[in-house]
Amino acid sequence: MANIKRFAAVHTKIKALEGLLLKESAYKDLLSFQEPAEIVGYLKEMPAYEEVLREIENYSELTVIERQLKKDIIEKYERLSHYFTDSYKKYYKTLFMRFEIEDIKLFLRTYLRQEDVAFIKEHIGQTKYHQVDLKTLTQIASLEEFIEALRGSSYHQLLKYYLEEAPENMMFYMEMSLDHYYFKTLYKQLSEFSNEDRILMEEVIGTNVDIQNLQWIYRGLKYYNLSSEELLNYTLDLGFSIKYHTLKELCYTREIGLLVDRIKKTKYGFLFTGSGHSELFFELNMERYLLQLMEALQRKSPMTFLDAIVYMHRKEYEIRDIFTLLEAKRYHAPIEDVKTFLVHVVD
Image (cartoon, rainbow, N blue to C red; front, side, top):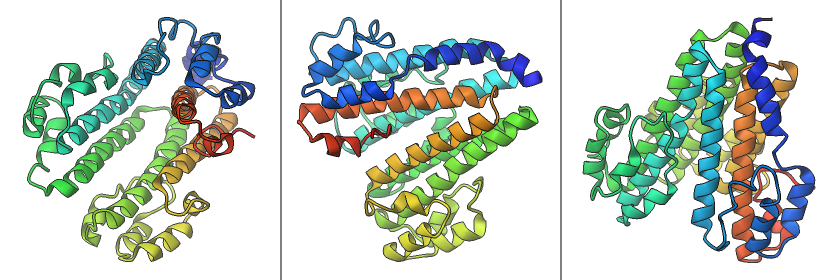
């Protein structure tokens, strides 16, 4: 009863927003088009995108389209925050940290590749809950100066620690540190939830951590040849199904083929099947699985905080698929090949 009263208003709002998500028939239509212009023209006729894309005229400028759609997502998410109170509002605001962390990673990659950081400005998804106004930092010339400019935020000490690392490993360490901080923050805040919501979200976050741990171990060994001790130190002991002894066994596996074989014996082994060792397909399988899990939990426990989480994932995956389609049509990729790169499964 408490959850019904707490989430009645936001549940109604989310149902309305979900009604604007693309249907199966829309994905089939989008796949059938030959050019990006046809996709954008089609989306302009959809209630969810007619206002957002109204000013778009040059359909080849995907950066402009990306900026508009990202801005729209953030504005929708920010408006939803008004429906939450107390610990739920605090947690919901913390979810926006994902945008900030992804933007910081973009800065870090650009500095380490010695590229022009000024171009990042068009890609930043600034929210009103950011700790740092990142758009003001696009004139900073070096990685060291950028990290110093983060002073006063949670990210300064996290990243400063790794400035002495070898350049070839620095990005991996920094990414893992940022992701760890995000998941730990979310998990800690669950203690203030109702029992039902806490149990649901512990499974969602714990499953995400399980999969992230597997991915970190795999990448850490294959691309960076990290020691077993380093790999174990960088895993998060917050998993839902994969516990410490399994993580330790995987981290102390030094041959990549054997590691993949052992991962395949875990609950999440199927994520590594069907497409070799491709990280892109691993990401796709992970996203599809997490969404299916959340939707299943939502059906069992309706009218909970999970409603908002499921909507956010559906919307972000929809935007991701739209960009996949735009890029694919630019290069006239075959339909059956494009389907394999979509998070949304189209029959």
